[in-house]
Length: 384
Ligand SMILES: Cc1ncc(CO)c(N)n1
Image 1 (spheres, rainbow, N blue to C red):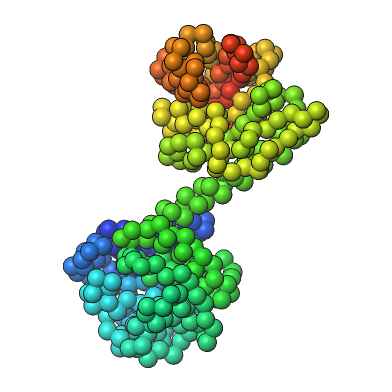
Image 2: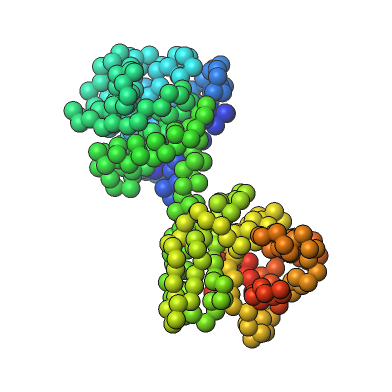
């Protein structure tokens, strides 16, 4: 795939956003800048279209090209150079800040050389386009946004905000889905779903990172589901009396609700293993707090689990070359001991202050009715 679009230095629109969308779907596009702009979310100062593309020597052919801010002259050049490619064009007549980029006539001219266009309804109405087109926007002030493709209507939630970059992102989503083999109708439905997720939580410009966050969350839950089946295979032997947890934090996690876990912990029930709840981000967890405390020192160490205390496990861990550390809980100040949930972050912080490097394996002997415990801290999970 080739992304052929304008450079917006503020990053809210144009090629920077197009590429982030493609990466979300594990597509690695080639990219050629069609125009340089000087703009931010509030104002648009200038645009300079490129005319010579030495990059054409680098890439033989493309099956699909996504075009953003471009004029008909460039489209013509692109068509001539990549005649077998499917070209999807999201032309910009005026920016959201009111700056004129190209004329409606230029859009008409360029449309002769593309396979599919994506346009908002106001711009579509002042043009005369013959090729397939997805029209977004629909009538103003309706509760839902209407999207039209070949007499088929699609709807999406309207949010009362003026966001920079919505056109680029929607057309990149459509292109990504077509690239992955979906029909145009399926691509519209999928793109509206992702748009809604991103727009809902955005201010000023579309925050594509909101979707990255979604992906992280799904990834973490999937990993925990995989671990669930591993724990089932492993049996009850490593599960402590008070229960076990295995947690995996989001990058930049700040509190235990940013940490994926097994709410209610994992328990022994006779010979069975009882998962109180499927992996989720709610609920409190000592292991989640252990990870949060660790991430303050080593932000890439995002996973932890506790296992039953057995001397042989400690021996084995040392044998295998894990970095181990004994946590002497008798040294805890009384206010830490008596305050629920404080001893783990306290103990770990102390360890990191001393060790000055990550540790894999921490254990304590238990005291005052607390079960002895072993904790693992990992970049990702490691097999027992
Ligand atoms: C580079 C670029 N492409 C597209 C748009 C339309 O939002 C913009 N403002 N800037």
